Image (cartoon, rainbow, N blue to C red):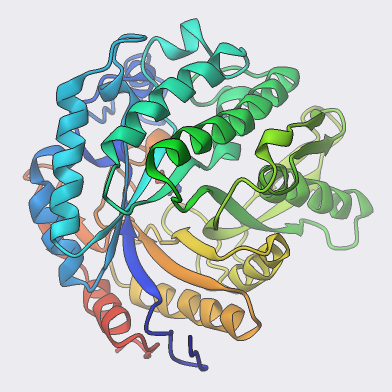
Length: 428
Ligand code: IFM
């Protein structure tokens, strides 16, 4: 494994990331219900056919290989696989298997997420994450997923961004299941940790040694007022709870959250100890935190501190925080995979520069001894961006949302150069 200031080692993986609901189309799940209830920013927006990846997957694999990707991250849609509790849809399982076999035949290593925000419609009503049954139903689901992954040499992510699900769905009530309760948030967090551990056991029994981890959304944090001790305390507590509590639980088997007045947890989960083979990092931006003297006591904002201009979704472009984040996960002593990094750039003009500055931080982290082994760009295609609907565009390929035609953005060429040359060059 050789690396220099500008080169990635020959075995470094460049790939692309997607998730089922955001691209496949035709899925009936908790988000489809949420949309019909008018809960998106634009109340009439619907994911509906998404970008029809379920039917256009072969074209999409070709688009991925055309930019030099050798790994492709998808997620399995639980609602397709188990639309009715306890009843598994064999055709859906077969459909995923067929797609993964084709993916592999195209020279793309599958990176498979078992859970990327969405749930079957029965889940929140019958076995929500704050109920103990949630762990058992996830175990059964992952057993079926294990069978479908046989012989594929996939890398597996149990949960995508569990803290986003918990904060948005259990603490703020902004996404499904729409709960706003600190105690239930912590119960749900505990069960997510337990669910990760049981899924790992199921997959291990069926597949033998399989690299497993989670994808954690990690933010760089800064105090809104650098001189204010309360803002600074929030940064310390917030970074620990948001960025590290989940990773730490999967490393030590101890779940510890300390957000006074918001949510606290102190639970030992021995089966989760040392339960990942890699640390998955999704990095996008930096947030400024400000103490406010009323619940939830935190104000969260993105600021354009460097005059680079916020990204189109309104996030700070802060590559410097990527290096800090990667340094911070070195403590877990595991290989690191960037399972997402990308920019909402609706004109397509900023993305090559964003890629360049962020990949430079990956190289800097490697030079400091952080064992980053892979980088998956979010996303291959423009897609459905949850509460934001169809506004944002994160894709290397631009998608015309009426015709679903895919067209390369300028970043495709740039990504291909770096991914195939394993060398960081400046964008033209
Ligand atoms: O689109 C999302 C993805 O589903 C999870 N990580 C962040 C992306 C951009 O917001």
